[in-house]
Length: 401
Image 1: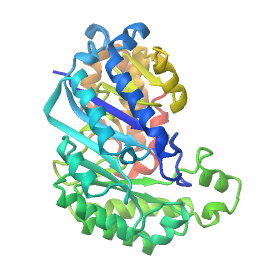
Image 2: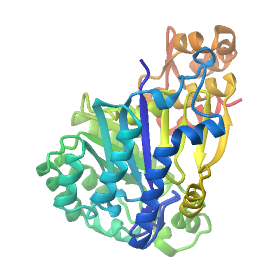
Image 3: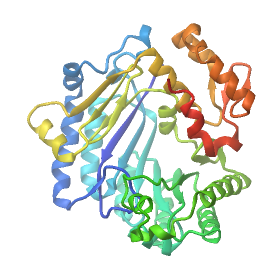
Image 4: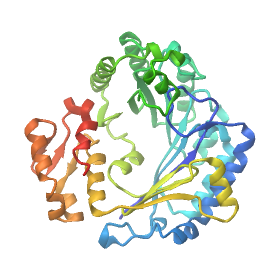
């Protein structure tokens, strides 16, 4: 039976990191109450919102999952931003609204994103008490110079202390995020960060490469050859490629399995929620900027918290975008999302869902990439070889019509 994932967005931070290209913003605590009340209101009104927008229900015969609001929830991800800034009481109210609206399974994986230093012992205890059983901690680096350069408010010592307090609070499933390519990063400092992370023995580690784009302040400076935010000390692409390969090797030697291009886990501790994205499983997003997917459609809420709240306060819909996916769109997503996984994708699954004729149109692309060594094919299963992970974006492009 299909299950549903929920993503709850809290788009506020105590400070804006220079590398951040998300839509989060710095805001005073006075805005949190109204925002969280809007999330509660959206949760309660979902059936009416979806009915008015003609999203949610989908016919299984054309790839839909049925009415997503009827599916049992087995993963919840509370992200941002820094959700802990809202405080435990508001968190508890939102979760109460979620449990009233959805059927939540006992096997729930419930992830909370945390920035080191943003949660005290009381908050961790109350979070654990309402069912949160997984933490994703934005460590980013264990080198204080790198952290200061990008505007992080915490130090490496604060990350270590938060991790230990989380363990004492009963959290047995913790992820640590690391970023390769931060200003002033060297091979030695990167190895230090990897070593410090693994010494804590988290169940999961995510390794991201700094993205140089115009959506972040640091990215803009790098592209314009500026010097602000340490832009002149951002390592080059060759360094980042070597850092990524170093991380893969280091983590593998210490028992972490790479199950997706950026994600590593001890056996059995893979992120169930994130796998929904790569495997085209349904999920519903709540909050400003949150996205949803039911197998046939993708829809998104207003990105700006103010616009999101105004629409809900007036009895309107917070949805700003709805896109129905053609079978061809769905097949493209099957490839470029599914191929992020170490196991790749099974062409038999695609043929059963969309028909052998439609999937067969991609046979020349698959055969060509196989001949050139950019994918590996074993019968009906294809995957990107590990040596090609660094050029995976170029490979994904081959599956976009």
